[in-house]
Length: 488
Image (cartoon, rainbow, N blue to C red; front, side, top):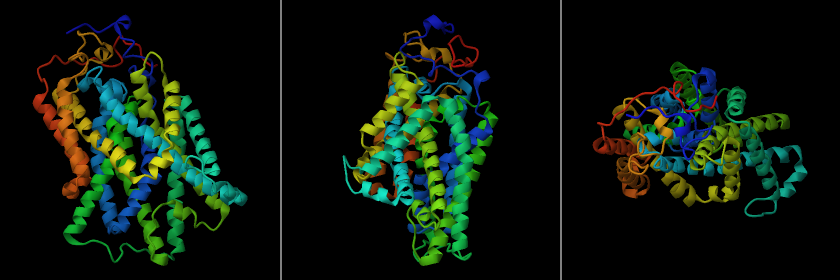
């Protein structure tokens, strides 16, 4: 084993201040911060659209709650496994990936995760801009004329709304992770109060009547399969976050903060989220027998313009919060990992945000093929990546990580493998990713498609376990005692 490297031994091709391990003295994310992370993300517009869709697909009130509850419990376990890695080492996901894939091979999982995030950043910004369009027209009816033309697929009003929200997010990100933490801490309670208030308003509007089912509600075996499928999809939705949760927990004050924040923020918060969905959908169905499709449809029914504006602003605050967490941080670290000598958090944020604008995300969102095959395909690959990284960290290395060697690109480094790439990880990734894609897209596997992430993760982990070198010298050097410069 080599001695811990000095600052001079750290490779500039693998290190900058944003990729360096966070020292414990500078970790500011406590239980409340982890909770508000999930308070924002669970209540996203996309998640409401997904959960409301379960009602239309034949699940009643208690089935929806059970499905979300099961998915929440499983997510709680997975997120703890992933989160503990960041808390122990203090490194972001691209650096964490070097453990299993090698100092150069880590670009593979980082690029997959970063690409998915950039595209979704653009799409989520577009969805928030649609809500902003509604608010602008509600306050200034004459502005509706600005929505009648089209340039590159978006009206003048659409461009104004998109660019305003796009620029707002760039400003927040330019101040780093600490500003993101503060924004999330404020946004979390705002969206919880707003969505709970909307649900209560709908329930009162329905005269206290609530429909827990429709004539199409499933029963028997079909019902249970639908419940398990919905629970599986709930986990798949968070396949990206499960993979790079260490980007946030590297700033966590302790493991107990992660566990407490995850417990309140995932299983309990998911049940609250499910209760709101049941109130919204059940109340609307009791009123006119109509199944709503999106939460924006509830907002548009508000009788007072002021209430509509306040609710719409809350949804915009929420979408920005979700974007910052799920779709901005990951590509920032990915770009830093690609060009550590030239980028920092602010510059990488500007570049990823610019790419999110240039891809014209509204055109992508309006193309089912792009969403299904490109984003769905990349999403399916996240499962095998998770399985490989988890098996390497927890089962093979048993959490014993040589943090300094994560920043060394010489042959003497513990994670140099074969010219910086671990061929065993690649061997495990290719067939497991191929299987996950087949299960996700081929009609013959339709019954198992909801579980493609799990199948890919299990296969990737099993193959890696069978081919990995389990006799290597693994040692544990805590992130706060190493000679590598830190971020604090």
